[in-house]
Length: 129
Image (cartoon, rainbow, N blue to C red; front, side):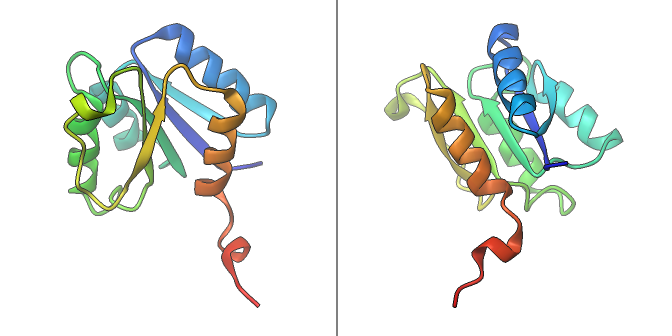
């Protein structure tokens, strides 16, 4: 089984779409409707290999979520990618090392899958000759 990917989005349709795409490609996915719900899961469950989070959400937005988990030793190394429909220049982006980039909505599922593959690849995939 491939690694676990957490999807955080207050749009149920986006969360379901990404979860189905992940499942169809051999990944296990966990969904949360906002950053607070995702934090609750992290406290109870296995840490995911990657987190895809919406930026604009109620209770705890994507940037706040990333800042919070990066301050906790058990989560600080989980790569996080923001998925947003907002204009990038309008966003306050995290400065933490676990923030890896942005996927702009509307997105192509193949693009999301390529990003998932990059950040969930086994370490031996990075070895050089």
